[in-house]
Length: 419
Image (cartoon, rainbow, N blue to C red; front, side):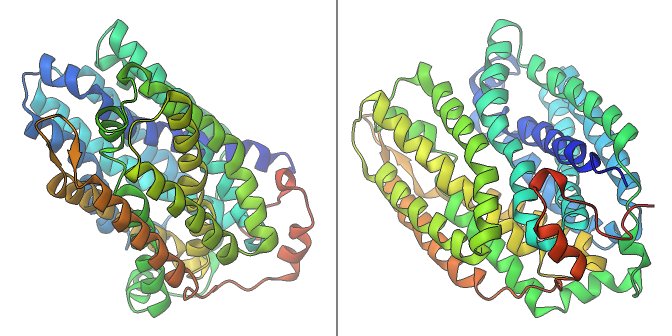
């Protein structure tokens, strides 16, 4: 077996995640330009933003019963090709209708691509090292914020709002070709006993799976409730310069790139639930500070936002590791697809709730944004309770115990997974 393969596989999965997250994140800062160029109102732009998450949730739910019936390699290459073409279609769109179609397609294919990446990690990385593996893949979120969004905004400013989508499609093409050349056939889940057609039904009848889905929902509430209006809050209430918003993403993203893999290693060493609880408690303090503060100097805002990226985003590393162990390997693809659906739908609900609750004062400041902070804290504390009620369903074999002693970069595949 090629011991170098994991070193190539995890960065490849991170690249796939990067394009998916970049495609989603870059749209929101493009609002003013899109509304001007495509002659749409605020409602039309909000629909474009919501279309991606809703499509990801709906398509993920529809695909969950079938995702464990195929070779992982075949699914990744097929679904990711659909994402690539959909993003290219967004960059070539000439009007609001075409762009809406592109966003729906990109959301559907992108959502499944994201869940497949986590499924592959769960298949090939032993449980005792899984949080570290997930931490490497999840650096894609930080890279999208630190590098992707600032560069995308600058390209849109120089050329057009279409440019970021065309660049994402180009990067996706490189990632697809790389996946075609190095991604092995992953069929170990097909060799396990059980009827593939019943896997989805078994997931739905598993109380532990439902507890894990509830855990995901509360994690999202604890994080995304304040996200959509965070930039507006910083500019309107904290008096942070609007032309320096890119620095918030850049600093936070760079810090997350450095800390996410380390959080995963800490979770593997000291326990996923324990590290998750610590991250949530620290994130809650940061959320309270951000949502209740008045005007601050630039350096203080960057310190707070950097801490938010480290702890609030970092909680998903041990949290996702907890979720991947909730069901056996044979049902993992269907379950993680459901988990992605819950994540996408709950992020849409949390975002919509924030838009409904918060109003703008005549002075331009946001009213009731503080309430969102307390709701996020409540969701985070509730997620700690759920995290301790998700049972690990995967046994530690002699193979995985030996793997636990290896360096993270030398994690071997599970026996029987590669054909």
